[in-house]
Amino acid sequence: MSLRTVLVLVAALVATSVSASPSAPAAAPLGFGGVVPVPVSATPAAGVTYQITSSTSLYTDVPAVGDQLARQLRRSTGYPVPIVAAPAAGGISLRLGSVSGGDEAYQLDVTATGITVLANRAAGLFNGVQTLRQLLPYAADSATVQPGPWPVQGGRITDAPRYAYRGAMLDVARHFFPVAAVQRYIDQIALYKINYLHLHLSDDQGWRIVIDSRPRLATYGGSTAVGGDPGGYYTKAQYQELVAYAAARNITIVPEIDLPGHTNAALASYAELNCNGVAPPLYTGTDVGFSTLCTSKEITYTFIDQVLGELAAITPGPYLHLGGDEASSTKPADYAAFMNRAQAIAAAHGKTVIGWHDIVKATPLPSTVVQYWGTTPKDSAVAGAGRKVIMSPASRAYLDMKYNSRTQLGQDWAGLIEVKDAYGWNPGSYLTGLPSQQVLGVEAPLWTETIRTSADIEYMAFPRLPALAELAWSPYGKHDWTAFKKRLGAQGPRWRVMGVNYYHSGQIAWPAGS
Ligand code: TNX
Image 1: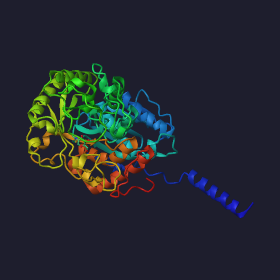
Image 2: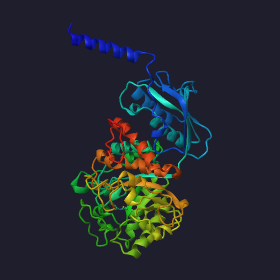
Image 3: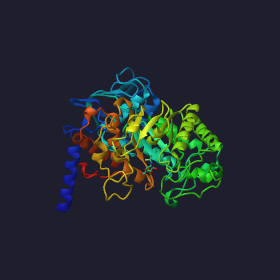
Image 4: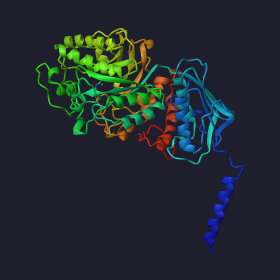
């Protein structure tokens, strides 16, 4: 036996005895300091750790929520994690009960002998589970069995959202994203307690949802995308599959049909929608503001009634987004009259309207929600409109803006948005003159003129989407860039495990290897 072989054998023996030794220090749990959005209150119990083991069971009052957690734990730990009919000592319990803070609030207790998430409603349990996921070792998000161990920091977290509307938007019109890609994004944003996904379903470059009474919208209007890339559309069954997939993750789909501008795909599909009766060619460029429905033709309103009626019928959520932005080819008086009629049609189908903030140039219904996408905090028309507002200031919240001048993807018309810029504003006081009670929430839109793949989506959304999610969820009293940077850095290793293609911003100290 050579000296080298002996040394290798000795080293192997030492390694075996160290890892098998009962006195070896247990792996430290991640702790409460890495949760995004930061919870309202998080009190660690010093020295207390829970361990997920091969005998851990799961009890749940809401099967849909418990099943998702059990499936994830089985996948990564390889343990059976049985769902049991009654809470078991030593196990995980997801229970309905009474906590303060409303439908989405939760309380999470971790002791040495069990984990309990308590909430008033399923939504709160789901939120509590998302927090629990971030307390688990990164490997718990793996799609394959990992070695463990699986320690969880002991203590109590109580939590509830600042805003009812915490949104993301995906433009599936400029580029089409198949169901699986949208589901992948839903999985990623749900981890940060986003509860609305706004789908921009129509624009000049493509129409993405089947309307049975107007079949050419999808089959012809949906055949194109920016740059000549492949088009596509969702069947009603696929759309409903997305609605259900999102709902299981506490996310409500908000469908948008952009009117009366951004309508070239519709105008190309049906000649009668054009004032001159001539269908324009399909469009694959990136200009805005050149198309308009013919506001003086009665057929236009029949068309809108058909489209909104069919869409409302497959949308259980309360909102229909009617767009209304950049209608620079529609005369101002025509725009106002048109948007007023369009709102009435949406309302007749039982839906609450959301419109881009241009809609304040019409007469927003008292219930209409105005989505602010400007670049300046001074917009007295929006602030003074007396309507609920969703805050998406383009210079802060637009995920399609470049991070810096070297970013390959995206645009820069609203400025460059590094992580600190995305995080560094207060949605409750951003718009001068808008009372904070009128802010319904925050939405992070991702326009896709330059975005073609899931990897592209992820690069632009991560890490800015979690920054915006924290603004939407956490009390502003917890707003702290220095602390946030650390919490955000802690997401990096998890994204690596999940295969999320994120931007390694130089502003964040990412842990080694992430
Ligand atoms: C403006 S923001 C638009 C979109 C573009 C986006 C690109 C808004 C309501 N309209 O049509 O895709 O800029 O950043």
